[in-house]
Amino acid sequence: MAKKRLSVVVTRRLPDAVETRLSELFDVRLREDDTPMTRTELIEAVKTADVLVPTVTDEIDAALIGQAGEQLKLIANYGAGVDHIDVATARQRGVLVSNTPGVLTDDTADMTMALILSVTRRMSEGMAQMQKGTWSGWAPTALLGGRVSGRRLGILGMGRIGQAVARRAHAFGMQVHYHNRRRLHDQIEADLEATYWESLDQMVARMDVISINCPHTPSTFHLMNARRLKLMKPDAVIVNTSRGEVIDENALTRMLRAGEMKGAGLDVYEHGTQVNPRLRELENVVLLPHMGSATVEGRMEMGEKVIINIKTFDDGHRPPDQVVPSML
Image (cartoon, rainbow, N blue to C red):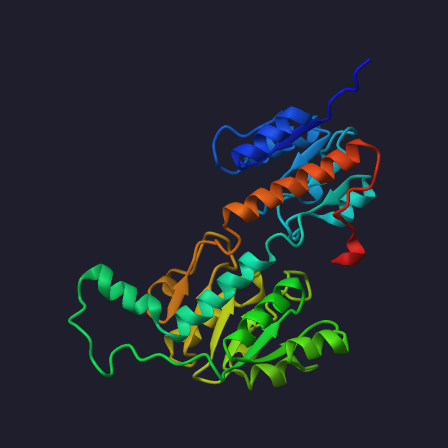
């Protein structure tokens, strides 16, 4: 007698190859359009599925998990970050949580460097002139930016992505500094030629560029608050490809408008798609629509990890990328 297939619900459209393979292996319910599920649809999903495959756009909180049926045993997140999932409540209910770490490291680090270059070289201002048709020709003093070589880069969060950013920055001739919950091993620190700062305040006050590469947790919410942002040098810039909640967006906007900071490059925002409208008006800001991980290769590898996690679980083993509360 054939083994019953796991019931899997996918909350967003995934690459065709990933959806096809999921359909071959499991009893899968796919999303017809690429819009987030409503709360009602999510409730129905957790009531009926053995496995839920959510993304960062889904709020899998305690209330939702509390409505799950007894058959829900795995939340196989399509993405590395899990701050949208109440992992502790899931564990209490006997529901495992997995994610897709590592596959987006290079993509996100590339985008971080792209934003650093875009802000310091004022690329968005130049693009705006070209798109509006207001460029009148080359001039010796027009749109003068600055070299990144020789600048001090302060990385907030020295995990996989932070270290990948450090390697890229070093290749551009930047001096790498970092603040992290735990200091890196001596050999890693030496390989990256990185200077550790136990005090975030002291690091922030001395850097030319700040790069946010830490996850969003209760301890990192508004880690870059108004007080800490004001410690930055007036000619410094800040870049965020991690989580928007780490920066107090209103305070950042006020400082940028007042000329108390040189510029910012943002791929993530404190309130998701609800970006501060005053932030949109600023010329010294580069805004991207959360596309730091948006490569074909990255999305495919994320899907492969989701499939491996579900298949391993279905075979009676611990998913290789299981997330537990102590990891957060």
